[in-house]
Image 1 (cartoon, rainbow, N blue to C red):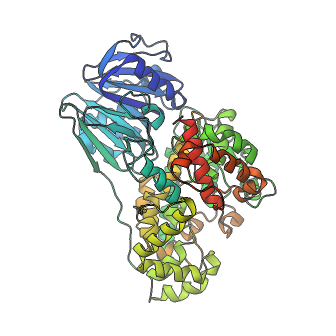
Image 2 (cartoon, rainbow, N blue to C red; image 1 turned 90 degrees about the horizontal axis):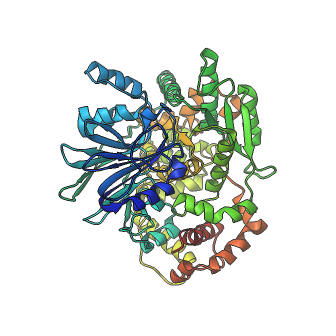
Image 3 (cartoon, helix red, strand yellow; image 1 turned 90 degrees about the vertical axis):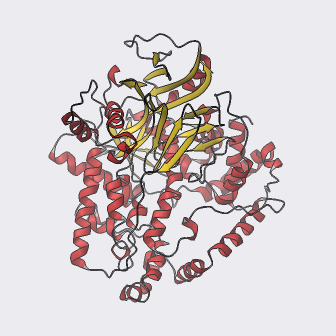
Length: 623
């Protein structure tokens, strides 16, 4: 897990060192540079002492740079930029199945100098070319200099767990793990993308768009590859992976259900196993819900059969708690901790610390974010760092693949009209926290997508802006996909989940922590999306696929919880206790908010949070 960057075009050592310094939190253990197209390696102030490279100096026509967080092969052999036969790579992430790929390549005649996954990735590209990504099970953002084709080949993992931000003006091409690092490249304008700022205030985070809040920067989207031709200056971007969710109507059958449940748990268990491969200590983020609990219980079961070096004698868990507030999930966290004998670490975020941390967190995240849950996760990752753990496993993705959100219930009911599933489940709407009125709204929205979207925009924008603004479409499918539960879940994974993964990356890497996500093993996602919706929501129970798959493993009280909370904070109470007053006073000082003609009074807390975040972002980056 690391920070990567690169520049094609005139640059110098000072500029490269500044970019590297900005990314130090992503990789405090080592630093490296390599010029391209002439491949020469250089060191920086933080390069490990045993590597005998000259200190970087002078001017360059192009270069790669790297900051290392040592997770696999802690020796200097894992140093990057890594070279093989003139090919050079900078890589951020983990290829969990690298051992099986390495074995396959060794059988083909390749030999390896290191014991980590970076050399395996680079060798995979040398052997399979751009299709190498089809072999990988993991999370990644990488760039490879190909000396034969005179191109830079870059790729981002299937779900967008790892970031890849780039700038291209036709003459210069540059990329980095974070937007703030690219700002240190002199050719990148330090300017607000006003259209994206307005989009954020109305729709919230939208990391499924290429555009960033910084003018001129773009994201390489999940499941996409990028090819930059150094000689012509042209870029080609294409998608390398997708899923076709099962949209067939099906009636629940217990015999078939048991086959699905067994396979789901089998793949999930293997996904957890793979994500425990580490040369540093691994812990688990625990909220008390089914998804995070399933990770903790699965690790506990694996520990009964064999010693797991990355876990040690005791599994560590990390949680946010809130005392007497409704958002507190201590009751459930304590059940898991008691039954699995973990060492439970807890932190209690509060609104006073949030007020003090606002600008610092805005800087960490590069762009404004949607809720105070992001702040709570930030505090959890700080706790992880203080405990001495370097890698965490997290339950993100479990709701989307197993049918966990209440809105999925009315969509599933509607899609099954007029078969027996429709009539048996419509009476169970309330049981799944999905009222009949929500069902009717779902049906209505299904047939009035564009009209409903425009009405929503007009309503929300009138609450935010003093003057009417031009219509900005949502741009994605998630808010208008009501035809099938699996299609909606897949749209949520490609849009809403991408936002959550970005905040997870920035929060964890701010403290040099690597977060891994077993539910986002592509094998599990492909399988889950092939399961008909009738097996994900059944007898009024959302997330039925997970509940039944983990029977006999997770405590029954947690497994059959009805009070789904997600990862909440007492945001409403915090606003009432003084954060609202603080936010309004803070916003008044913002030049950007005034320029955008944004209201301050009588806006809902959800919108006020976005506005104060935008103001904090402006101040953090000194626009």
